[in-house]
Length: 225
Image 1 (tube, one colour):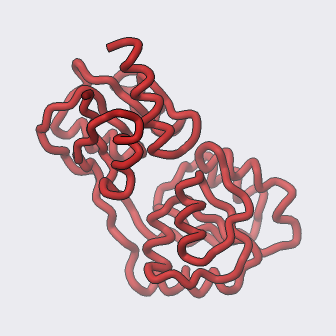
Image 2 (tube, rainbow, N blue to C red):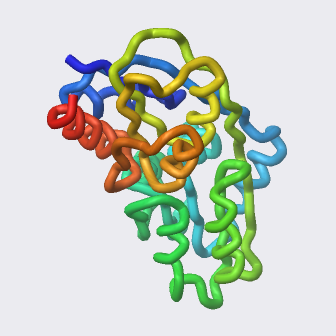
């Protein structure tokens, strides 16, 4: 069975997708999550109660703001099905679910925000181009960065492939490892762009989820390895 290094810090949550795809997941976290100060978390939580539309970029946002559930009953737009599931589990109602990165979600929001208050809870440093586009669409956008990611060097466990879910994970990987003799998978175009400075990604997931990435890696390896 091909071994794939999972670089996310959420190994227990995402590993089943790799097992389902017929791969052996290996925990090789390449990022550390640093939450925003408690006052900023509280401000974001309060802000969500006063907005018409809430945009959420990742499952981590949900777990930081509503670790015990009880999300506000507000229309929510999210990046990817994994985030949508987390929102539902926390008691929220995702109305718009993007099928790619933040840039795609921003495009889906065109025409949905006119005359409405909009808040986005996200990671510090989220896709700058997508954020700039969102500010054009929503001039009075309320922005709440609730965490930041710090690259960290992964372990030395041998793997046949590596799965990257963020540019920060790519930065962490190269702190101690290279790309020789390993299949490289990226969860989306933004992450694939981070890989390019080192080499081309072998596969890019069709949608922003670890299951989609696992399936893409497994399919590639079945044919090419």
